[in-house]
Length: 448
Image (tube, rainbow, N blue to C red; front, side):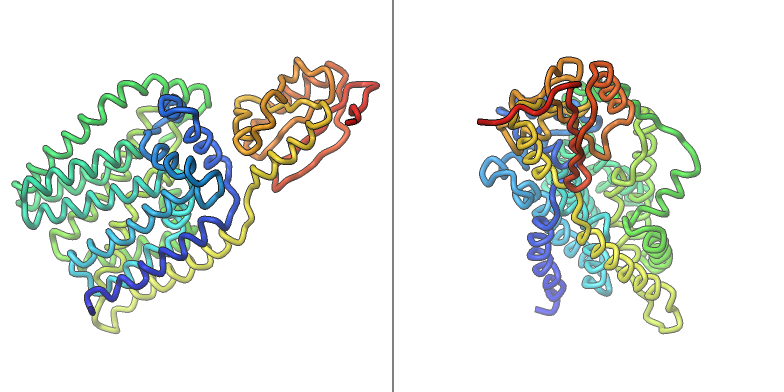
């Protein structure tokens, strides 16, 4: 029973994820994914996914299975990510044991409290699912290095392919890990793993060929751009943990101390996966013209955590690594509490308010390029109540949120002003503003 003692925090974590998943309202990116996941049919889902640069369908389809059964509640929308977040904890526990970690409990604590990890474990996006496949594949490759077999190679190929079809950058950590095996004399394992990785990438090629033009169009239309500058490295050091500069520097510092104590193969394997995960993300952004975001390197977290917490010093004189881990755990906990205490956005509430505001003849104006489906998703009764600013003839309710492009809002209000409309009232629902505009000399039509 002692060897399974570390599973206790994993079991507790399952309950914590269920609680946290229903705690905050859905935010914009989750709503947009829900719009895609709830299209009338699977081809409709696929079409929506292609609009998202770097998007892949597996995370959307997993969410679709749940929300079509249980509805649009935050817990249902986040059920699949929460499940895969829990499975990631299980996989990390097994990986840490295979690496002969001195304390699997400490490894798990650092991983489970990591703000970047726990955020995506309870967010209705595909990153938690992709993280699981990436981590499980890395663990499978480690097992392949210990005992090469076709069965493990086939499993490795399947896990990498599943990760690619969830989030393509999830496979980036595998390149460095394979290179580490090859340079360490594990040639049979490296050969089998390399063939399996190639098969997985070939299986993803049809999707890439199908969507690459849409990805490029989405990047250009959204005015994204990439800038290779030293600030990217600072952003990594500041945000890699999701807990701010102090937590991130503590994580990197503890990982550096742990790297010195790991055995030769383990430290090469883990460090190389971190390097390739970061380098491939930056290279992909540079080639596509997309902006760099720390979520793209989420998949290096398990290796960093293992380096930071799996091999602690025995001597009390070597206190730097334990001290850095203590800082990491404390700061992460504070960051997690603050994040989940923040009520966030309330899109269902905004949709209800918009339905009420348009119930007496007003039309709703959503500045481009935002889709009005974000509101119709929660209130189907809004169908038919939307209009363009140029077409408004009576009262108009303009919707503004913190993601609305200033240029789009200015153009909308300019068009309404040219038609002699003026703003008469404003309603705020968790940061989403509803601005009522009336034409000159007219008021709201009374309901019977």
